[in-house]
Image (cartoon, rainbow, N blue to C red):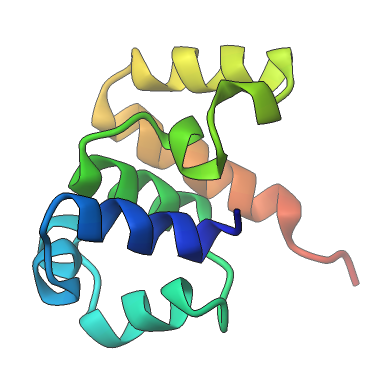
Length: 102
């Protein structure tokens, strides 16, 4: 199942409107709609916000732990255990190293 489809499935299973999930996740309903229909791919911070809004571990939004490598699971576990301020620093660092080099 694709990421957006999984978000929609979980949202509906919880009886949430797109507006309610968007508010809980700090996103706009329009942006969330584009994710659900697969027009956009989420950033790491968006995945984390949606996981929090749905009250699930981020890995579950990708089909559960079986689809992530052991290294990714360890990174997620470690990430979840640190303060929010440090999580934001890690996210910024990952975004920085992902930028294409000129």
